[in-house]
Length: 130
Image (cartoon, rainbow, N blue to C red; front, side):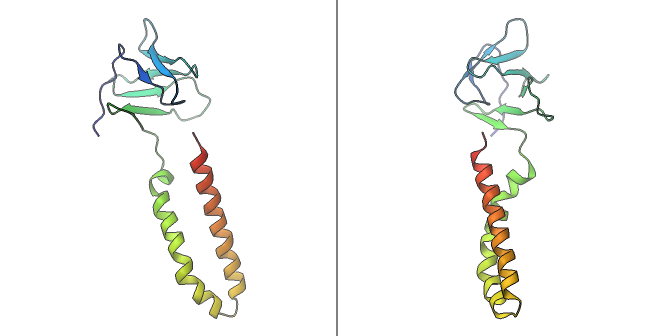
């Protein structure tokens, strides 16, 4: 979806807390959320909303698509995580019979279980973040 220009006269949903409403701050090119008190500034072109008051070293940024906010800070893990998850789900059915036939199958099986648990933990952590 093509991003739309963000208008200071329009009220938008908060991209951070998802419950509040963004309202323009008088005499500035910024918005404030009425629920989470976050402050957001506009990029010079008016297409990107950036979170200003944050201790996070990288600025969070969003683009308005007309109906919702699209996160501009999607990392590589966000983009490729489903592919990694599918690959790890397909490896055990192929690898497990080979591992069990080898002499050191128990060690390789333990490694497979540990790697699967690590992926599961990362998946659960990713699902629970805001």
